[in-house]
Length: 137
Image 1 (cartoon, one colour):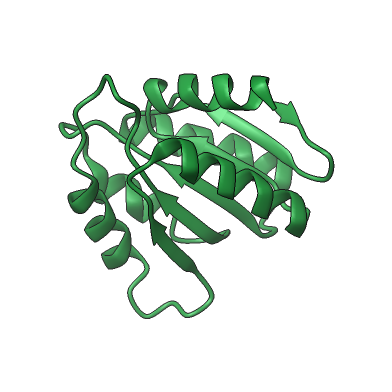
Image 2 (cartoon, one colour):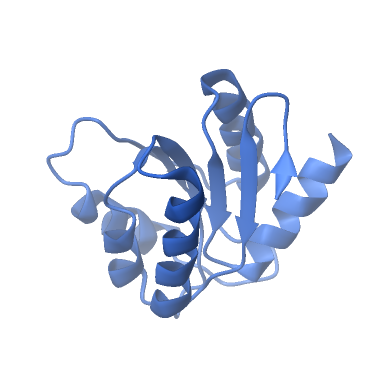
């Protein structure tokens, strides 16, 4: 976990349905049902449809991105999974940003401005990239 000026940033390498469920259980036990932001990316072979459903409450901003340069992903499939999971919800802003560095930087700035926690998860590769970006700030 990284403490920022006004928001907590939680990094978790959860990349399976079970590990994402456990991450969310812990995240919600710490932050409650309050508003939060999410950056999510996963490898192409992961069960993204099932994982997207797990994020259906508690997040007002969700950014889907790629996990990094070294891991094959299917950002279109992931974006569609999240769009289906949030279909009809008007209180969630879903964005797709292929550039993971940009996605992380924008999400961190928005979380700071909003004063809400940010969860970055879905891939060890994404978490490693986020850690590098956050450490250099």
